[in-house]
Image 1 (cartoon, rainbow, N blue to C red):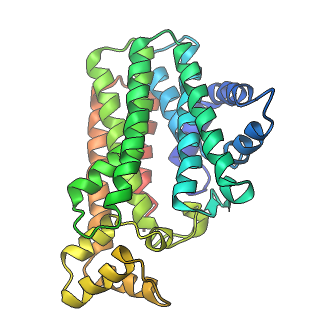
Image 2 (cartoon, rainbow, N blue to C red):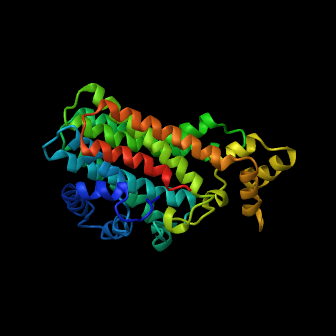
Image 3 (cartoon, rainbow, N blue to C red):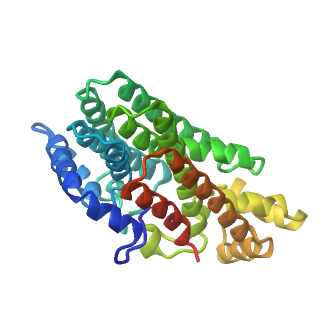
Length: 333
């Protein structure tokens, strides 16, 4: 998932402000993704890492640390750690989902093979733990290790929940909090921890990251039914084709009559998809106002994220994080 490209959007302003730190992060990433004995590791990693991703998650770590007054070196290690964890999950996700496009480019599993993607993802997870250990903080290790476990748990839960029409919004939120928000909240929280921030600020950073991550994933799911490939970095309708029961569909199913429910059962639960089914799905989503309701829910989470920032020191980075939260939903027109 990539943010819309435009001049000086909130993400761009954050990137400009953190440019020096991000250059150090990128150097460290290139150093640690190297392998003396297995050249395929840097080949596969570079394909994804150098593909123009916005580095949102590591920037959240850098911003949180700087916002809390950190002046040491280890926010660089933590930002690289977060990016390695994220890249590893993307490599694994593309194998699970049998995806063919990521960030507008062919996926690693398509260019190489599934085995390479899985094993290189494992290597990056291992590298991430080496990096976080170097900070010398057991609390940081605890936060990021828990996030890694939660991400995997969320992905496994999605395997069983995504194609079951009985899946409700509570289960959907549990999946989203696992597979997406867990790394957002860990990314912001460890920035505060490494800076030695007061506990109320560390909690606020966690809350901000969690709410931002939930909003981000809801919008990602929404854009799958109304975005463009250039914005979302994947093919429009991929979630439908992969039979993922995301929030817009959950809302439409909840209001479906018997005929509509039979349609959703055929295309999602049974996987019997035919020509014109995506158009029919879009018609049903529009009929029941599912897309508008989903956008409203994303806005609720944005408000939670921005409210959490009130506990943090007044700083231009705090303002940028608030603007970033607004922009997550502003991508949806």
